[in-house]
Image (cartoon, rainbow, N blue to C red; front, side):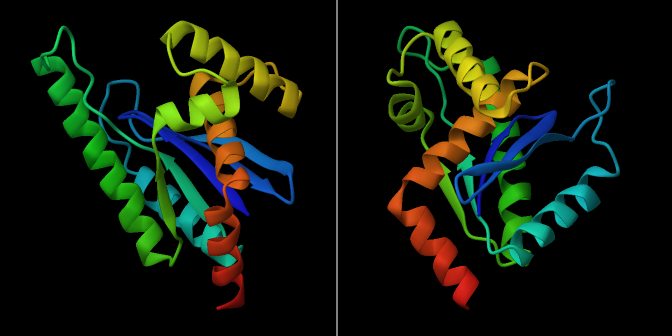
Length: 171
């Protein structure tokens, strides 16, 4: 099983892919509407990773990067980067505690591999949404869930994902 995750400071969107079929797509909310961390998030994340471990899954987590504007990082970008680094730490810690391997995926890599191009934010979001809707048959996907579907597809197509899943399943 391969799980693709697209996480931000407010939510974790996931897609579970097994034997070429999408088994689940959803979102775990990290923050409430006021922007505060929801107390149920830690237990939900732990339960999610525990189940992933039981199924011998490999998690593919969209990597984080510090975008630049005209060659300089803005304070807003730095703050967002710090928040995402914290979220990634939470996800990786939960995965480690449940013996779930995690692979970071560079967004440009999965964009190119799954969508065929890697430039233009709006075009990328639209292409990911179209692909995910086609594969899931769902029109109610969020942009994060659509990205998670594409990240899972990328993970399933990489030899490393299958090798690590087989190793995890065989002990």
